[in-house]
Length: 604
Ligand SMILES: [Cu+2]
Image (tube, rainbow, N blue to C red):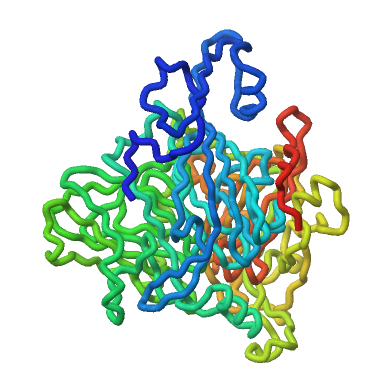
């Protein structure tokens, strides 16, 4: 799993760079090399221009060295039998593996992923955190930006990575397929651009996830039938393995990271779990946090990180302890009275020269309700905000929105276990109903009757959100979007409600990064709370935990036209309806409108 920075992880695709003399270490036998010496407006064939219109920037006066690639990947979505915890079941995978392949690219590259659906389910893949400037067609959430890829069909996701570098993830964005259909998406800096911290000796992807012994589609279907919450998972996993399990000796030791004394390692940690926020720590080692959600942060040292589904965290670990074996642990964070999978996944940091029979130094996982440990980590996150990576926080706000997020209860005559009612979730009391035509298609082709633009900017009835619940817990069903003018600035205060139970909701926004300018407990106070906002170096990310019984304020600039999903990244809450979409109008400028859809865009 260790990725050596100087080797080419991608074995297919072609390179666009300076002439051979400048090409250096790039390229391997699978690369089709295209040489470009870009001088003024000439030097490019029309074929090159056609193929690379997103990537081309001309300069009349300087010799502009460009070095980017078009990276081709093929994702075969196939069913495989897999065993964990001494039981096996068929799972949906990409290329037969779960976690699936790591997708490597550099900032500026164009990525083409051909996804071929060989399974019985409809499929779509989301490139979580990729901004998808004007290319919403490649974003992936089923029925939001595309119809799903039907069994036997394929679709090429085609997008360019602009102004981003760091660790992200890809995952299925339909049903509960994300449980096993996920993997890392590593965006390296442009060639020759260093990290803003000392280069680690090597890098490793660490994917945290969950495992159910049962089929996950059966788990959620059974829950929807009953009206009640689905079963929690049976194990957490680190790179696909739970680590040693007492009642299943054949499960094995789990993932091992071999290290050499004195060297530094960058862990690209990804939470791909469906429903659980996780603590992560390593026995005897400090973690230096350098990046979250593919944005650099001011480095800080910690024992424990907390990471919500959909979030990523890069940490540097120095192998500075005595030779030996040290356990990593991934355990749940839940500070509300909600059932979680209480199992801790473990993996091993193994110093070279240590016998495999030598004992492991273990770490104690934090208690699951360790709110102070979580807050200590979250409050330490600040944007790097350097000259090269400034925090461009909107200081003026065009749309000031208050979104109450939480649960509700609706009638369900067939829900016997739920006594004729079912748990739902909502944003501003709207339980989002998935359309049968993708919203982006409806928007682009002006198809009427698919959605309405009356998503409320405030809760329809103000109540004590974090106090005693209102008498009526019922929500309204609807496919509503909130419309934004191109380049307008938006502040959303995400306010948790205590209906049924207050709970931390990791809310993910597609198409944008946002700045987390403030957070607090209880109800948001629009008079006093903004005075405490951090508009200088707030952390920039794409997924943010709304604290249980509290609120978080985020800001972003609507500079990406299209339809962009925003939803809780706990899959159970998304399923229950904690989701909505922003519709961002086209701007007037030449590069400010949604590009036309690709020809192979799936049909519903
Ligand atoms: Cu949630």
